[in-house]
Image (cartoon, rainbow, N blue to C red; front, side, top):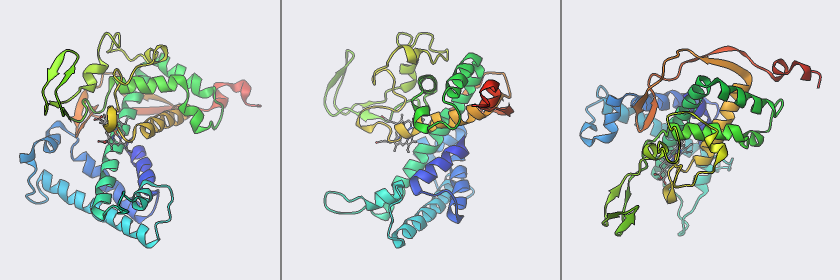
Length: 320
Ligand code: HEM
């Protein structure tokens, strides 16, 4: 899933899907992100006293060295686009290079690189992790899998991606996964500007609040049997932006929320329409901190049982 989401984000951000720089950046980004794949290593991100660069044999030194290599590749990409007169190919980098602020100023190269790295970082691991949880729950619940496959099959061969994105049961599966496994357990901190009363609690100015997505998504009054994976709850009712917040809320809501949901639906639809999969192990998978995200401990290991095709599912429709 990481490979898929990395390829998608690289194509969207740079318009890159091949070439030498693409081949270089793929493993670099993967190893850079993997540096925070355990609770211990993740601590580097949270405790400034661990952020000491004592050369490339220390974790933070390694992190910085990989980050520098990524910055060099990003810089090369920016310069190449500039020499080619930045023919706008619709990718995010071209759009950011063409953007001007109210004084007619373009973004500096450092600003461009920081924005690019943020999008690569925020848009890669999060989507991959949600997809892994979705495959896990779908295959732990055979009725969910069969309903999903029926819905997908109803679109026929080679469906239009936008039709897939609007499928109600697929959308409900996607939402239920995001409810049960919010990859970011909490929102970014908010600081009160003035005194405010929230649900009977009075907060003075300058209070740091960290809303918990996880606690909200497990509230029994909103989500009966919250520990149960039950996509139907999203078919029966529309949750408000105060009840369902996997992508945060307000003006700092996730920039990639629409892209992420589209990507998750298209990947699930493509894989589930074409393959019959099974979980390798039957035991429940626990949550583990991975960088800023909550991920399946040890990953979700699956294997292919066989290829699927519509003509096998509905043999009588072969002649149509
Ligand atoms: C399933 C996938 C994803 C989840 C669950 C997710 C979740 C979140 C959450 C909870 C926040 C904090 C919002 C807040 O504090 O109100 C956030 C912020 C952000 N996300 Fe995502 N995200 C996902 C995918 C993406 C993708 C694909 C991109 C980029 C293409 C992206 C880019 C960002 C950025 C740039 C921010 C910071 C926004 C700001 O501070 O103004 N995310 N995301």
